[in-house]
Image 1 (cartoon, helix red, strand yellow):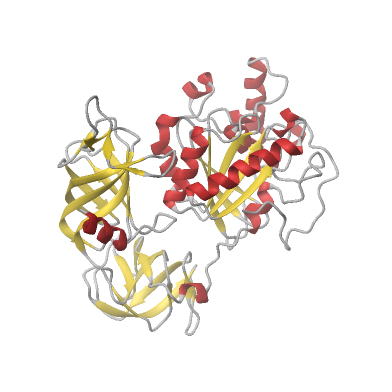
Image 2 (cartoon, rainbow, N blue to C red):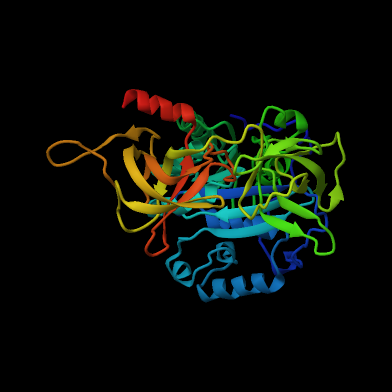
Length: 471
């Protein structure tokens, strides 16, 4: 776990105190002109009242990512509530009912940019009963920003969100110890929580973890470093986000097989050109590569382009790049098809997965459903529930306590996470889930109403084999 600055962050801390927000601070929201800026997907998490919405509001305000009329509306709402200062949480609390209650219940997506990065931020709810929303927000995140109230330290919901981040394999976690102003910027209090976070990171199997003391209300260490925490020598939240290196390289991708889900097909009616466009989920691709498609047929890449610009051999496009490719054979592919390196992913009618139950109706073993995996939709059945995942500890609980004896789990309630086996009518090229959500994620759908019942993550095959061996 790291809380010190890196070699690339060598600027001195800001020698001015954070100031009260005024309308003069608001500019026209910037429109990034550099389309080549890398995009980082963020997700905020933490317990209720740890200050997530205020943090996001501060982030948007201090990066000049809101409009003047938006801020003026917040000022009016704040004055109507009798507040002396603008309540920045109103910038992101999207539902009227939740504003009245002072809580956030949905996943609100926000967009902002700095000179170095573009960001997509999912502001997740903090209540325990909305764990499914948190899973949704984290499933595509590069970074989770986990807020902790400095006065409370690590609480149950902090454990839950950290466990979910660990289960999903989120690459980076930034722990924002919020409301540091309420303890007079006391270092000892921060260090105590820092020790709690270190233990939590080990327990939840988190990898790259940074811990930062902040005040969302005052702006300390959110965008700019604060002179009010001279004992903290690390970067601000935004400095960390700007310098997280998620860029794949050809060397990184060399050991990974190509996975290119087709987002759309490009047809030129004036020529015979047929291109397949999408974002590379894993591996790399270059002109001349042999690839396979969903039905197992092989072809070679004849042309490759990024943003309309041709890429000639030996140059390659790597994971994260949005590309279009042309094949040397006349293969009819549609949205959702998979262009892959050889050999093509293994197909199966049975898959083991971790799912989060998203419906209010209980999910029972042997219930018939539809499974949607990429472009594939097939009839499916929940074959078995190995156990419920305790999101406080990450452990698998194979039985549910009852009045007389512990009983095997045969039913899932809303928001529960579980390890399950699913059988499908059609053979599907299932692959283990990879952080980012492009590979190995699926939905279970009620075949009568069309409602989403659960979201799932395919487990590695070695986990399937281990479970079969112990069955």
